[in-house]
Length: 308
Image 1: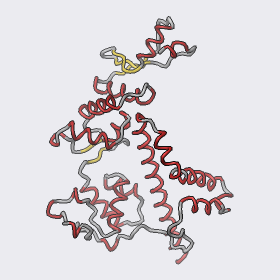
Image 2 (image 1 turned 180 degrees about the vertical axis):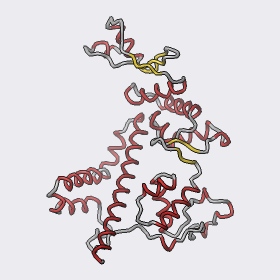
Image 3 (image 1 turned 90 degrees about the vertical axis):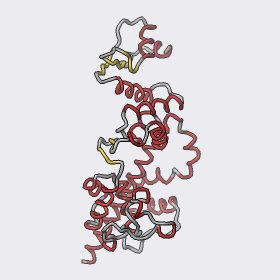
Image 4 (image 1 turned 30 degrees about the horizontal axis):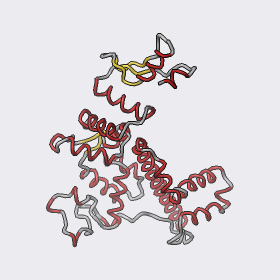
């Protein structure tokens, strides 16, 4: 607060809940303005209800305020789970600065099973059912009908996430049921000796190919490390000669350098940033996986044209 009062700059606006005139965010800025002898301060008014005002207070503090203790972030997440039960674990985790797994544990402890909503709103604003059985079965049918369709296309038509579509496709390619055991009816839950039996939901598995891959014999040999593959790509003039190729190499280099720095990077993440870093890491991994899928599909199409 004293640091803020000593700055010779205009303070950012505080956020005030108009119906109650309560300060939602910016108490330190207000006190700093008083210490500076100022009679006015810029204000952003919020006209929503008290529940949403609390969410804004937590979100703003997580984004730029003093780090909250773990117990405070846990308590905030529990309050938001109770006031906004239809929000997904990832949405609440991002607001409170926690991991989605932690929010899931908080939700189970805070809400009885009979008051859990049937669907939740994700970070993209879309409503998705908690029971994705119907969406998974529809995705399996679409994959069988259009094996070259992208994950996003299937996800949009089936009403599930691209990550779930990828899981369905992988299960089908292995000859497994598109539904995890936890989502199957009791009479379709296999014993330990038959958990990898083919699916029995009316999907023609034979028409579902495994992940398409380049038919070229020049593909990477099994066992090569990321760094050795990167060194080969860096020396390839077809990638180095163009700006887009160099951009790709820079991105691949940054990804390949994570593993050697793993422990140091883990130690560098403060507790209040764990949720945000986890979200970015998972979204980055999903983006690379989708990029690889699209690249393999393109390779298959080019191979088919060459054969034709």
